[in-house]
Amino acid sequence: MNARPQIASQSSGALALAGSAAGHAAKNIQSLTGLRFYAAFSVFFSHMYHFGYFGVEGPARLLFAGIGHLGVSLFYVLSGFVLLIRYHDSFAEGAGLKRFYVARLARIYPAFIATGLLAIPIEFFSPYRGQMLWTLGANATLTHCLSPQTCGRLNDVGWSVGVEAAFYVLFPLLLAWLRPGWKLGASMVLVTGGVVALQMLGHGGFWASDRFFINRVPEFFCGMLAGAFFLRGKSLPGANRVIGLRVWITVLAGILALAPLWLEAFHLTPYYYLCLMLPSSLLISVLACGERQGVSLRLFTAAAIVFGGDISYSFYLLHNLLLRYLRHGSAVVFHASLADTPLWMQLGLASLALVSALIGSALLYRYVEKPGRQKLRA
Image 1 (cartoon, rainbow, N blue to C red):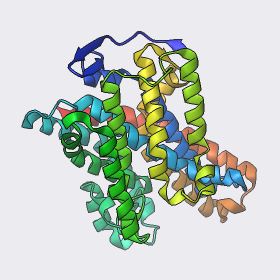
Image 2 (tube, helix red, strand yellow):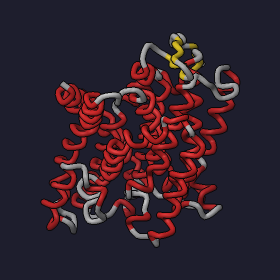
Image 3 (cartoon, one colour):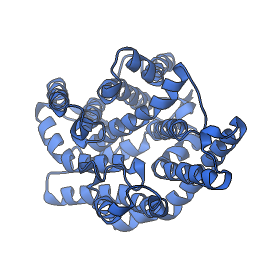
Image 4 (cartoon, rainbow, N blue to C red):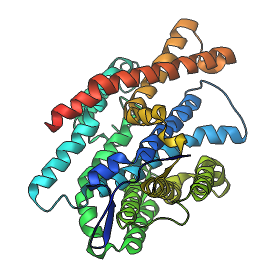
């Protein structure tokens, strides 16, 4: 545990913000930046399993296969939380709306396009190279998540960026709906109920899948509700004390880490995104409320972890490409699939992928993502 300086409080009507402005408050919650680091790593380890970099059986197989879903859910809930805090009063005039969309595009576009270009060579070895121009156009316009023919093509993990871009389009509308009276509970029931209805009508097709953006709106909106709770200056019981924060983190982290097991046991795996949004939003709220009171965990605020959170978006986009290139390279050099190679070689390649992804994402963040964001916003 470590104590961080309390963010100066300033009340405005029913809202009590931590910080001189909501945007600064969102940026200064270091614990949430650290949380992004763990979310990205959960996706990395899950993809290592799916690409065959190591083989496990039994309950461990479920954990490795499903833990990546947790990372994506955390990103979506966290996105709604941060955007609500940062932009809850920014749309009084048209200029604020324009600034919002420019800032959001600048946030996701440079690294997304750069990794998409890096994916083009290996895409020529896929069965879908005949659709390359269509795929490139859909990715360039961030509309690739609207069609099953382009969703997940090029850089597979990029589908989630298309969903995030759809959230940005919807955010002002969701905020306008939520703001009158801040009817949090009723709004969440309506949004989730609408998605469940879509699931029932979708009959298991793309429109009912976890890659179609409408089905992920409840996660994003749940994060917005958690942000509204935070803005009211309230805190979850015990989150402002060392022991209480430890208990909250231990319980929620355990629920989320073991999610693949209990989702499988209750046959809820296809609807994981509806099941994980509540514990994810509670974890985010606990960390944010605790840090506002000057209480935080080194596990989330250590300098290395926060830096990992800063580069997590680049890491998320880059790691999948590296795993694909290493898998293809091993097939060409050793004329064997990863599943047929010795365990020591699988672990060696996995370690190489991890180190390469960390170094590569740091470089991508330093020379593409960060300067690209600044230029677009300017």
